[in-house]
Length: 117
Image 1: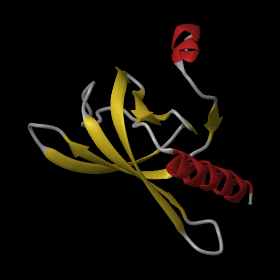
Image 2: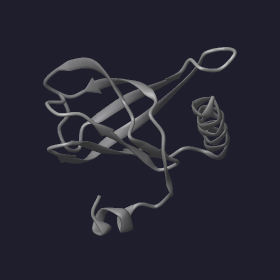
Image 3: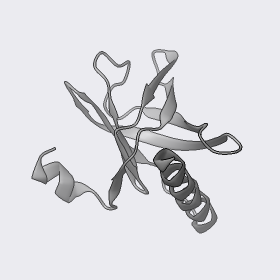
Image 4: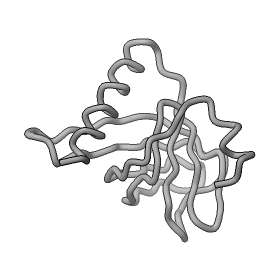
């Protein structure tokens, strides 16, 4: 990843592959597809995939799934596509209030711990 893109991030990203559903809410079509995150942080994520149905500046809902824990976890978050490349898409999460930030931070921590087992 280029340094320029790295410098534009507002939060650190963790290398973490989460099963993800992407629900597109574009003006021309409604679509859903599945992929895995390459990295994720409090500010956004990168979805590595070629031929995705995403376009820059569209709003999506992401549903992250973690099944390696005693009980399966799921987290839903709104995001916007901010970058498209040949290898995937960069998404920025919609602003979260303090409570949702706390919940998302906890989800990421538990997902990272589950990924180690």
